[in-house]
Length: 236
Image (cartoon, rainbow, N blue to C red; front, side, top):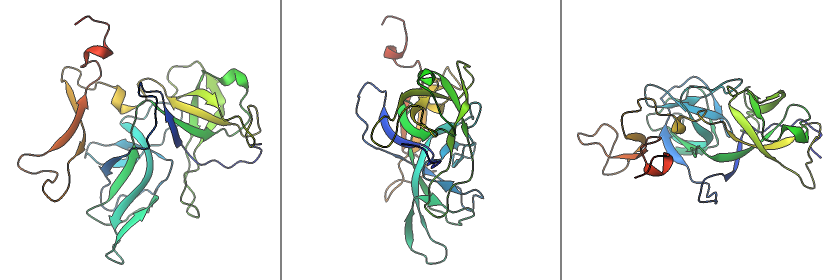
């Protein structure tokens, strides 16, 4: 039974996409050198104007640029000069190669714990989150669902789509474990910011033969919402 408060942030578990299968794939996105805020496994992150990733304090409303869930990073440790893999980004780390691993599926389903009991009637409703500093002991986010915020309000950022119901968790537990997804327009990938352009850059090809800012930069792109015929109600 989920009778102890053990918030772990957002844990990716599934997807609502047409493929029906969650593979755990991540996007590699840059964090600015010496960024001054720690990011923990399970934190929401956003893309900022500089084209880098920062922590997104998702609470009662949509945070502009929210792109997904942070599940780790790599960087050259400034103390050891060794390539380091970490499920936490330590604040103020100074390195030119910091790369966040982000699960950026706009239709992602992720597990979060409520900060109080959430009844069966919460299913299908919208909910806000409690954003707080993560645990430096285990490297995990401590974000949770705000059980008192459940409503049909369409400005809330998340929606409950299922409960974790099994040997160690039941609907209505003191700290209910829920499966949630982004509310439409809560994820940057579902918003057309300049909606006359057809494509969006989601990542750069950064490796031995290609780098960000090259004279002819190699990019990974996707369709902008409504740029693909299957995302509109119009005939072809």
